[in-house]
Image 1: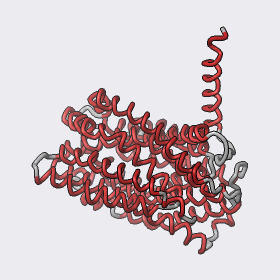
Image 2: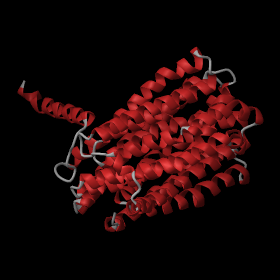
Image 3: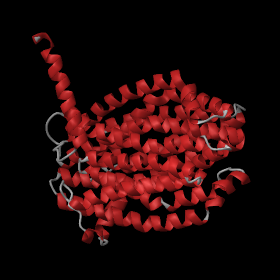
Image 4: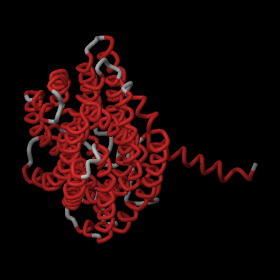
Length: 470
Protein backbone atom coordinates (compact mmCIF):
# COMPACT_ATOMS: atom_id res chain seq x y z
CA UNK A 1 0.00 0.00 0.00
CA UNK A 2 2.78 2.46 0.89
CA UNK A 3 4.20 2.18 -2.63
CA UNK A 4 1.21 4.00 -4.07
CA UNK A 5 0.95 6.78 -1.48
CA UNK A 6 3.15 9.35 -3.29
CA UNK A 7 1.17 8.99 -6.54
CA UNK A 8 -2.11 9.06 -4.61
CA UNK A 9 -1.02 12.19 -2.75
CA UNK A 10 -0.02 13.92 -5.97
CA UNK A 11 -3.34 13.05 -7.59
CA UNK A 12 -5.16 14.37 -4.54
CA UNK A 13 -3.25 17.67 -4.74
CA UNK A 14 -4.13 18.00 -8.44
CA UNK A 15 -7.84 17.50 -7.74
CA UNK A 16 -7.66 20.00 -4.86
CA UNK A 17 -6.01 22.54 -7.15
CA UNK A 18 -8.65 22.05 -9.86
CA UNK A 19 -11.39 22.42 -7.24
CA UNK A 20 -9.84 25.67 -5.97
CA UNK A 21 -9.48 26.99 -9.54
CA UNK A 22 -13.13 26.29 -10.35
CA UNK A 23 -14.38 27.66 -7.04
CA UNK A 24 -12.44 30.91 -7.41
CA UNK A 25 -11.86 33.40 -4.61
CA UNK A 26 -9.14 35.79 -3.51
CA UNK A 27 -5.56 34.60 -4.07
CA UNK A 28 -2.27 36.48 -3.76
CA UNK A 29 -0.48 35.67 -7.04
CA UNK A 30 2.61 37.68 -6.09
CA UNK A 31 3.75 34.98 -3.64
CA UNK A 32 4.12 31.21 -3.49
CA UNK A 33 4.34 28.63 -6.27
CA UNK A 34 4.26 30.10 -9.79
CA UNK A 35 3.07 26.78 -11.21
CA UNK A 36 0.13 26.82 -8.79
CA UNK A 37 -0.65 30.45 -9.66
CA UNK A 38 -0.61 29.69 -13.41
CA UNK A 39 -2.95 26.72 -13.01
CA UNK A 40 -5.35 28.53 -10.65
CA UNK A 41 -5.79 31.20 -13.31
CA UNK A 42 -5.37 29.12 -16.47
CA UNK A 43 -7.93 26.38 -15.70
CA UNK A 44 -10.97 28.70 -15.40
CA UNK A 45 -9.64 30.97 -18.17
CA UNK A 46 -9.33 28.03 -20.56
CA UNK A 47 -12.84 26.85 -19.70
CA UNK A 48 -14.10 30.41 -20.16
CA UNK A 49 -12.65 30.57 -23.67
CA UNK A 50 -13.92 27.07 -24.49
CA UNK A 51 -17.38 28.43 -23.75
CA UNK A 52 -16.79 31.48 -25.95
CA UNK A 53 -15.84 29.20 -28.83
CA UNK A 54 -18.89 27.01 -28.16
CA UNK A 55 -21.07 30.03 -28.99
CA UNK A 56 -19.78 29.97 -32.55
CA UNK A 57 -19.95 26.19 -32.92
CA UNK A 58 -23.50 25.86 -31.55
CA UNK A 59 -24.73 28.45 -34.05
CA UNK A 60 -22.75 26.79 -36.84
CA UNK A 61 -24.13 23.34 -36.03
CA UNK A 62 -27.80 24.32 -36.09
CA UNK A 63 -27.41 26.76 -38.99
CA UNK A 64 -25.40 24.19 -40.97
CA UNK A 65 -28.40 21.85 -40.97
CA UNK A 66 -30.89 24.40 -42.28
CA UNK A 67 -32.14 24.23 -45.90
CA UNK A 68 -29.74 26.14 -48.19
CA UNK A 69 -27.11 25.75 -45.47
CA UNK A 70 -24.26 27.16 -47.57
CA UNK A 71 -26.03 30.54 -47.64
CA UNK A 72 -26.71 30.38 -43.91
CA UNK A 73 -23.13 29.36 -43.03
CA UNK A 74 -21.77 32.12 -45.24
CA UNK A 75 -24.03 34.71 -43.57
CA UNK A 76 -22.93 33.63 -40.09
CA UNK A 77 -19.27 33.62 -41.12
CA UNK A 78 -19.36 37.00 -42.87
CA UNK A 79 -21.24 38.60 -39.98
CA UNK A 80 -18.77 37.15 -37.49
CA UNK A 81 -15.92 38.52 -39.61
CA UNK A 82 -17.38 42.03 -39.30
CA UNK A 83 -18.11 41.44 -35.61
CA UNK A 84 -14.40 40.86 -35.12
CA UNK A 85 -14.12 44.65 -35.18
CA UNK A 86 -16.54 44.74 -32.23
CA UNK A 87 -14.52 41.97 -30.61
CA UNK A 88 -11.41 44.07 -31.18
CA UNK A 89 -12.94 46.93 -29.24
CA UNK A 90 -14.11 44.51 -26.54
CA UNK A 91 -10.74 42.79 -26.25
CA UNK A 92 -8.81 46.07 -26.33
CA UNK A 93 -10.92 47.49 -23.50
CA UNK A 94 -10.71 44.17 -21.68
CA UNK A 95 -6.91 44.16 -21.92
CA UNK A 96 -6.71 47.70 -20.56
CA UNK A 97 -9.06 46.81 -17.70
CA UNK A 98 -7.04 43.67 -16.89
CA UNK A 99 -3.72 45.56 -16.94
CA UNK A 100 -4.90 48.46 -14.77
CA UNK A 101 -6.95 46.39 -12.33
CA UNK A 102 -4.14 43.82 -11.95
CA UNK A 103 -1.57 46.56 -11.32
CA UNK A 104 -3.76 48.19 -8.63
CA UNK A 105 -4.43 44.79 -7.00
CA UNK A 106 -0.68 44.13 -6.99
CA UNK A 107 -0.26 47.48 -5.25
CA UNK A 108 -2.88 46.39 -2.65
CA UNK A 109 -5.38 49.09 -3.70
CA UNK A 110 -8.73 47.34 -4.45
CA UNK A 111 -10.78 50.57 -4.33
CA UNK A 112 -8.81 52.12 -7.20
CA UNK A 113 -8.99 48.79 -9.02
CA UNK A 114 -12.81 48.91 -8.77
CA UNK A 115 -12.93 52.52 -9.95
CA UNK A 116 -10.71 51.74 -12.95
CA UNK A 117 -12.93 48.82 -13.96
CA UNK A 118 -16.09 50.92 -13.81
CA UNK A 119 -14.50 53.72 -15.84
CA UNK A 120 -13.70 51.17 -18.56
CA UNK A 121 -17.40 50.18 -18.58
CA UNK A 122 -18.39 53.84 -19.00
CA UNK A 123 -16.15 54.18 -22.06
CA UNK A 124 -17.49 50.96 -23.60
CA UNK A 125 -21.13 51.96 -23.16
CA UNK A 126 -20.68 55.33 -24.87
CA UNK A 127 -18.82 53.90 -27.88
CA UNK A 128 -20.98 50.84 -28.50
CA UNK A 129 -24.35 52.55 -28.55
CA UNK A 130 -23.14 54.34 -31.70
CA UNK A 131 -21.54 51.26 -33.29
CA UNK A 132 -24.55 49.05 -32.61
CA UNK A 133 -26.99 51.52 -34.16
CA UNK A 134 -24.84 51.89 -37.31
CA UNK A 135 -24.46 48.11 -37.70
CA UNK A 136 -28.19 47.56 -37.34
CA UNK A 137 -29.03 50.17 -39.99
CA UNK A 138 -26.42 49.11 -42.58
CA UNK A 139 -26.72 45.29 -42.14
CA UNK A 140 -27.52 44.46 -45.79
CA UNK A 141 -24.78 46.77 -47.08
CA UNK A 142 -22.26 45.15 -44.73
CA UNK A 143 -22.97 41.65 -46.10
CA UNK A 144 -22.77 42.87 -49.71
CA UNK A 145 -19.50 44.69 -49.02
CA UNK A 146 -18.06 41.50 -47.54
CA UNK A 147 -18.59 39.64 -50.84
CA UNK A 148 -21.95 37.97 -50.21
CA UNK A 149 -24.23 37.41 -53.18
CA UNK A 150 -27.41 39.49 -53.31
CA UNK A 151 -29.48 36.47 -52.28
CA UNK A 152 -27.25 35.72 -49.26
CA UNK A 153 -27.30 39.38 -48.21
CA UNK A 154 -31.11 39.52 -48.26
CA UNK A 155 -31.51 36.19 -46.45
CA UNK A 156 -29.02 37.20 -43.77
CA UNK A 157 -30.05 40.81 -43.09
CA UNK A 158 -32.10 40.12 -39.95
CA UNK A 159 -29.37 37.88 -38.51
CA UNK A 160 -26.75 40.57 -39.08
CA UNK A 161 -28.98 43.34 -37.67
CA UNK A 162 -29.51 41.48 -34.41
CA UNK A 163 -25.86 40.47 -34.06
CA UNK A 164 -24.57 43.98 -34.75
CA UNK A 165 -27.24 45.48 -32.50
CA UNK A 166 -26.06 43.38 -29.55
CA UNK A 167 -22.55 44.86 -29.71
CA UNK A 168 -22.98 46.50 -26.28
CA UNK A 169 -23.68 43.08 -24.75
CA UNK A 170 -20.65 41.52 -26.51
CA UNK A 171 -18.32 44.24 -25.26
CA UNK A 172 -19.63 44.11 -21.69
CA UNK A 173 -19.24 40.32 -21.59
CA UNK A 174 -15.57 40.57 -22.59
CA UNK A 175 -14.82 43.72 -20.59
CA UNK A 176 -16.28 42.69 -17.24
CA UNK A 177 -14.55 39.32 -17.53
CA UNK A 178 -11.31 41.25 -18.10
CA UNK A 179 -11.97 43.16 -14.87
CA UNK A 180 -12.47 39.93 -12.92
CA UNK A 181 -9.37 38.38 -14.49
CA UNK A 182 -7.27 41.41 -13.50
CA UNK A 183 -8.49 41.00 -9.93
CA UNK A 184 -7.43 37.34 -10.08
CA UNK A 185 -10.97 35.90 -9.89
CA UNK A 186 -11.07 34.04 -13.19
CA UNK A 187 -13.72 31.61 -11.90
CA UNK A 188 -16.49 34.25 -12.08
CA UNK A 189 -15.46 35.06 -15.65
CA UNK A 190 -15.61 31.36 -16.47
CA UNK A 191 -19.03 30.86 -14.91
CA UNK A 192 -20.52 33.83 -16.76
CA UNK A 193 -19.62 32.18 -20.08
CA UNK A 194 -20.96 28.82 -18.92
CA UNK A 195 -24.30 30.40 -18.00
CA UNK A 196 -24.43 32.31 -21.29
CA UNK A 197 -23.69 29.15 -23.27
CA UNK A 198 -26.18 26.95 -21.47
CA UNK A 199 -28.85 29.53 -22.28
CA UNK A 200 -27.70 29.66 -25.92
CA UNK A 201 -27.64 25.86 -26.29
CA UNK A 202 -31.19 25.61 -24.94
CA UNK A 203 -32.53 28.55 -26.96
CA UNK A 204 -30.85 27.79 -30.31
CA UNK A 205 -32.91 24.70 -31.28
CA UNK A 206 -35.99 26.28 -29.69
CA UNK A 207 -35.74 29.51 -31.72
CA UNK A 208 -34.43 27.96 -34.96
CA UNK A 209 -36.53 24.80 -35.20
CA UNK A 210 -39.45 24.89 -32.75
CA UNK A 211 -40.38 28.54 -33.31
CA UNK A 212 -39.27 28.16 -36.94
CA UNK A 213 -37.30 31.43 -36.94
CA UNK A 214 -34.42 29.90 -38.90
CA UNK A 215 -31.25 31.98 -39.12
CA UNK A 216 -32.85 34.88 -37.24
CA UNK A 217 -33.55 32.50 -34.36
CA UNK A 218 -29.84 31.78 -33.99
CA UNK A 219 -29.14 35.50 -33.53
CA UNK A 220 -31.96 35.87 -30.97
CA UNK A 221 -30.72 32.86 -28.97
CA UNK A 222 -27.12 34.12 -28.94
CA UNK A 223 -28.17 37.62 -27.85
CA UNK A 224 -30.33 36.35 -24.98
CA UNK A 225 -27.59 33.92 -23.93
CA UNK A 226 -24.90 36.60 -23.81
CA UNK A 227 -27.28 38.98 -22.06
CA UNK A 228 -27.85 36.38 -19.33
CA UNK A 229 -24.09 36.10 -18.83
CA UNK A 230 -23.76 39.88 -18.47
CA UNK A 231 -26.52 39.94 -15.83
CA UNK A 232 -24.57 37.33 -13.84
CA UNK A 233 -21.38 39.41 -14.12
CA UNK A 234 -23.08 42.60 -12.95
CA UNK A 235 -24.58 40.80 -9.97
CA UNK A 236 -21.14 39.70 -8.74
CA UNK A 237 -19.47 43.00 -9.66
CA UNK A 238 -21.86 44.99 -7.46
CA UNK A 239 -22.24 42.31 -4.78
CA UNK A 240 -18.70 43.15 -3.66
CA UNK A 241 -17.74 39.93 -1.84
CA UNK A 242 -14.33 39.69 -3.52
CA UNK A 243 -11.47 42.11 -4.14
CA UNK A 244 -13.69 44.36 -6.25
CA UNK A 245 -16.38 46.55 -4.69
CA UNK A 246 -18.10 48.36 -7.56
CA UNK A 247 -20.45 51.29 -6.99
CA UNK A 248 -22.77 53.07 -9.43
CA UNK A 249 -21.03 56.32 -8.49
CA UNK A 250 -17.83 54.94 -10.02
CA UNK A 251 -19.50 55.11 -13.47
CA UNK A 252 -19.41 58.92 -13.38
CA UNK A 253 -16.69 59.93 -15.88
CA UNK A 254 -13.32 60.65 -14.31
CA UNK A 255 -11.35 62.13 -17.17
CA UNK A 256 -7.82 61.54 -15.87
CA UNK A 257 -8.60 57.89 -15.29
CA UNK A 258 -10.37 57.59 -18.64
CA UNK A 259 -7.29 59.01 -20.39
CA UNK A 260 -5.04 56.54 -18.55
CA UNK A 261 -7.26 53.62 -19.56
CA UNK A 262 -7.53 54.79 -23.18
CA UNK A 263 -3.74 55.16 -23.33
CA UNK A 264 -3.55 51.38 -22.88
CA UNK A 265 -6.81 50.48 -24.60
CA UNK A 266 -6.34 52.38 -27.89
CA UNK A 267 -3.25 50.49 -29.07
CA UNK A 268 -4.89 47.33 -27.71
CA UNK A 269 -7.94 48.03 -29.87
CA UNK A 270 -5.72 48.88 -32.83
CA UNK A 271 -3.80 45.62 -32.52
CA UNK A 272 -6.99 43.60 -32.84
CA UNK A 273 -8.49 45.88 -35.49
CA UNK A 274 -5.29 45.34 -37.48
CA UNK A 275 -5.56 41.57 -37.17
CA UNK A 276 -9.36 41.57 -37.62
CA UNK A 277 -9.15 43.62 -40.81
CA UNK A 278 -6.57 41.19 -42.19
CA UNK A 279 -8.97 38.31 -41.48
CA UNK A 280 -11.77 40.29 -43.15
CA UNK A 281 -9.51 40.70 -46.19
CA UNK A 282 -8.89 36.93 -46.28
CA UNK A 283 -12.61 36.26 -45.90
CA UNK A 284 -13.39 38.55 -48.82
CA UNK A 285 -10.53 37.10 -50.89
CA UNK A 286 -11.81 33.55 -50.36
CA UNK A 287 -15.45 34.58 -51.01
CA UNK A 288 -14.51 36.28 -54.30
CA UNK A 289 -12.20 33.53 -55.56
CA UNK A 290 -13.90 30.43 -54.09
CA UNK A 291 -17.57 31.32 -54.40
CA UNK A 292 -20.26 30.44 -51.86
CA UNK A 293 -18.91 26.92 -51.27
CA UNK A 294 -15.34 28.11 -50.84
CA UNK A 295 -16.47 30.83 -48.44
CA UNK A 296 -18.61 28.41 -46.40
CA UNK A 297 -15.74 25.89 -46.22
CA UNK A 298 -13.33 28.58 -45.07
CA UNK A 299 -15.81 29.80 -42.43
CA UNK A 300 -16.27 26.25 -41.13
CA UNK A 301 -12.49 25.74 -40.88
CA UNK A 302 -12.03 29.09 -39.14
CA UNK A 303 -14.72 28.24 -36.59
CA UNK A 304 -12.90 25.00 -35.80
CA UNK A 305 -9.56 26.83 -35.69
CA UNK A 306 -10.99 29.38 -33.25
CA UNK A 307 -12.50 26.58 -31.17
CA UNK A 308 -9.01 25.13 -30.68
CA UNK A 309 -7.25 28.47 -30.23
CA UNK A 310 -9.56 30.08 -27.69
CA UNK A 311 -8.62 27.73 -24.81
CA UNK A 312 -4.96 28.58 -25.50
CA UNK A 313 -5.88 32.23 -25.51
CA UNK A 314 -7.60 31.71 -22.17
CA UNK A 315 -4.46 30.08 -20.83
CA UNK A 316 -2.34 32.96 -22.15
CA UNK A 317 -4.58 35.40 -20.24
CA UNK A 318 -3.15 33.89 -17.07
CA UNK A 319 0.19 35.39 -18.09
CA UNK A 320 -1.42 38.84 -18.44
CA UNK A 321 -2.84 38.74 -14.90
CA UNK A 322 0.38 37.39 -13.38
CA UNK A 323 2.55 39.93 -15.19
CA UNK A 324 0.29 42.83 -14.16
CA UNK A 325 0.03 41.85 -10.50
CA UNK A 326 3.72 40.99 -10.11
CA UNK A 327 4.85 44.21 -11.78
CA UNK A 328 2.54 46.06 -9.39
CA UNK A 329 4.28 44.26 -6.51
CA UNK A 330 7.70 45.02 -8.09
CA UNK A 331 8.40 41.29 -8.60
CA UNK A 332 10.01 41.56 -12.06
CA UNK A 333 11.73 38.16 -12.18
CA UNK A 334 8.58 36.43 -10.98
CA UNK A 335 6.59 38.16 -13.72
CA UNK A 336 8.99 36.85 -16.38
CA UNK A 337 9.09 33.32 -14.98
CA UNK A 338 5.26 33.25 -14.95
CA UNK A 339 5.23 33.84 -18.70
CA UNK A 340 7.59 30.95 -19.46
CA UNK A 341 5.62 28.60 -17.19
CA UNK A 342 2.45 29.53 -19.02
CA UNK A 343 4.11 29.07 -22.41
CA UNK A 344 5.18 25.54 -21.49
CA UNK A 345 1.56 24.51 -20.83
CA UNK A 346 0.33 26.17 -24.02
CA UNK A 347 2.90 24.37 -26.16
CA UNK A 348 1.79 21.02 -24.69
CA UNK A 349 -1.87 21.79 -25.39
CA UNK A 350 -1.26 23.04 -28.93
CA UNK A 351 0.83 19.96 -29.79
CA UNK A 352 -2.16 17.79 -28.85
CA UNK A 353 -4.50 19.98 -30.91
CA UNK A 354 -2.20 19.67 -33.93
CA UNK A 355 -2.41 15.88 -33.82
CA UNK A 356 -6.22 15.97 -33.49
CA UNK A 357 -6.64 18.40 -36.40
CA UNK A 358 -4.38 16.45 -38.74
CA UNK A 359 -5.92 13.10 -37.85
CA UNK A 360 -9.60 14.06 -37.73
CA UNK A 361 -10.00 17.13 -39.97
CA UNK A 362 -12.52 15.46 -42.28
CA UNK A 363 -14.58 14.10 -39.39
CA UNK A 364 -14.67 17.48 -37.63
CA UNK A 365 -15.78 19.29 -40.79
CA UNK A 366 -18.45 16.66 -41.56
CA UNK A 367 -20.05 17.22 -38.16
CA UNK A 368 -20.93 20.83 -39.03
CA UNK A 369 -22.20 20.62 -42.60
CA UNK A 370 -23.95 18.18 -44.93
CA UNK A 371 -22.45 19.79 -48.04
CA UNK A 372 -19.68 17.57 -49.47
CA UNK A 373 -17.91 20.45 -51.21
CA UNK A 374 -17.93 22.61 -48.08
CA UNK A 375 -16.58 19.68 -46.01
CA UNK A 376 -13.70 19.08 -48.43
CA UNK A 377 -12.61 22.73 -48.42
CA UNK A 378 -12.86 22.97 -44.61
CA UNK A 379 -10.76 19.81 -44.12
CA UNK A 380 -8.12 21.07 -46.58
CA UNK A 381 -7.91 24.41 -44.76
CA UNK A 382 -7.47 22.65 -41.40
CA UNK A 383 -4.66 20.44 -42.73
CA UNK A 384 -2.78 23.48 -44.01
CA UNK A 385 -3.27 25.68 -40.94
CA UNK A 386 -2.84 23.13 -38.15
CA UNK A 387 0.97 22.67 -38.38
CA UNK A 388 1.27 26.25 -37.13
CA UNK A 389 -0.75 25.67 -33.94
CA UNK A 390 2.26 25.63 -31.61
CA UNK A 391 3.46 28.92 -33.11
CA UNK A 392 0.02 30.43 -32.63
CA UNK A 393 0.20 29.48 -28.93
CA UNK A 394 3.68 30.96 -28.40
CA UNK A 395 2.62 34.21 -30.06
CA UNK A 396 -0.50 34.40 -27.87
CA UNK A 397 1.30 34.05 -24.55
CA UNK A 398 4.00 36.58 -25.49
CA UNK A 399 1.43 39.13 -26.60
CA UNK A 400 -0.64 38.57 -23.47
CA UNK A 401 2.46 39.28 -21.40
CA UNK A 402 3.01 42.60 -23.20
CA UNK A 403 -0.66 43.51 -22.79
CA UNK A 404 -0.68 42.55 -19.11
CA UNK A 405 2.29 44.85 -18.57
CA UNK A 406 0.43 47.67 -20.33
CA UNK A 407 2.86 47.60 -23.29
CA UNK A 408 0.07 47.31 -25.85
CA UNK A 409 2.01 49.22 -28.52
CA UNK A 410 4.53 46.37 -28.82
CA UNK A 411 1.80 43.91 -29.76
CA UNK A 412 0.17 46.42 -32.09
CA UNK A 413 3.39 46.82 -34.08
CA UNK A 414 3.91 43.06 -34.25
CA UNK A 415 0.36 42.54 -35.51
CA UNK A 416 0.73 45.21 -38.18
CA UNK A 417 3.95 43.73 -39.55
CA UNK A 418 2.84 40.11 -39.22
CA UNK A 419 -0.59 40.50 -40.77
CA UNK A 420 -0.22 43.39 -43.23
CA UNK A 421 3.39 42.97 -44.31
CA UNK A 422 3.31 39.16 -44.37
CA UNK A 423 -0.15 37.55 -44.27
CA UNK A 424 -2.22 39.84 -46.53
CA UNK A 425 0.34 40.33 -49.35
CA UNK A 426 1.27 36.62 -49.29
CA UNK A 427 -2.37 35.53 -49.45
CA UNK A 428 -3.03 37.81 -52.44
CA UNK A 429 0.18 36.68 -54.17
CA UNK A 430 -0.55 32.98 -53.63
CA UNK A 431 -4.19 33.27 -54.75
CA UNK A 432 -3.77 35.53 -57.78
CA UNK A 433 -0.05 35.66 -58.55
CA UNK A 434 0.71 31.94 -58.28
CA UNK A 435 -2.88 30.89 -59.12
CA UNK A 436 -3.08 28.55 -56.14
CA UNK A 437 -6.71 29.52 -55.50
CA UNK A 438 -8.09 29.63 -51.97
CA UNK A 439 -5.43 27.12 -50.85
CA UNK A 440 -2.94 29.99 -51.11
CA UNK A 441 -4.96 32.06 -48.65
CA UNK A 442 -4.86 29.17 -46.13
CA UNK A 443 -1.09 28.79 -46.55
CA UNK A 444 -0.40 32.45 -45.75
CA UNK A 445 -1.74 32.01 -42.20
CA UNK A 446 0.94 29.72 -40.66
CA UNK A 447 3.68 31.65 -42.51
CA UNK A 448 2.57 34.92 -40.90
CA UNK A 449 2.40 33.35 -37.44
CA UNK A 450 5.93 31.99 -37.80
CA UNK A 451 7.16 35.57 -38.04
CA UNK A 452 4.91 36.83 -35.22
CA UNK A 453 5.93 34.06 -32.80
CA UNK A 454 9.67 34.50 -33.42
CA UNK A 455 9.59 38.29 -33.26
CA UNK A 456 7.45 38.45 -30.12
CA UNK A 457 9.80 36.04 -28.31
CA UNK A 458 12.86 38.14 -29.16
CA UNK A 459 11.08 41.33 -28.13
CA UNK A 460 10.02 39.77 -24.83
CA UNK A 461 13.61 38.78 -24.02
CA UNK A 462 14.70 42.42 -24.47
CA UNK A 463 12.62 43.23 -21.38
CA UNK A 464 11.34 46.72 -22.19
CA UNK A 465 7.86 45.63 -21.04
CA UNK A 466 9.15 45.61 -17.44
CA UNK A 467 9.61 49.39 -17.52
CA UNK A 468 6.06 50.37 -18.54
CA UNK A 469 4.16 52.52 -16.04
CA UNK A 470 0.40 52.02 -15.64
